[in-house]
Image (cartoon, rainbow, N blue to C red; front, side, top):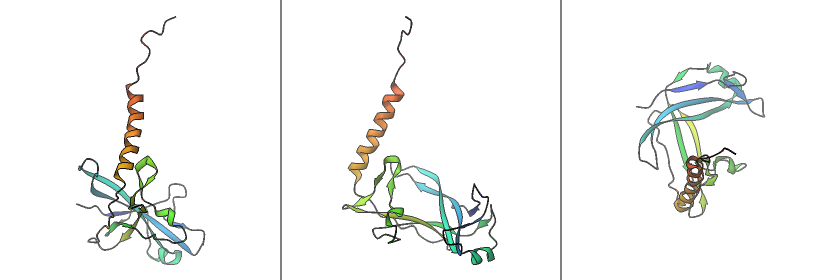
Length: 160
């Protein structure tokens, strides 16, 4: 049921290979629609997941990537209690939706990243968070705010 992985062009430059701060290194951005089970509702929903394929620009150019190209493989989700990058660990923190709250296990942050694998059978690795009450309160506060706005009614008599 998993779809092919699609090579994406940069929306600004229309380039497939994007350079990093070091011109020798670059990356190709890819996406895939994956069937996922929504944690809140339990419903199956298609989700777009993206990843970067990093490498030397010369090696990436040798692969002749082009926008819209379909690759056999999978965008894999990895979660861990250990940072994936010690120089910038905050970059990979798993944040719950629009709450801005970091998902944790016993107060320890969860790190999340996606990566491309040519192995279509590669498995996702998830870490179940335990700060459920904190997240539930945040979501309730958000929906309470939107409920108040959605239920607001205009004044019945605006005439003077």
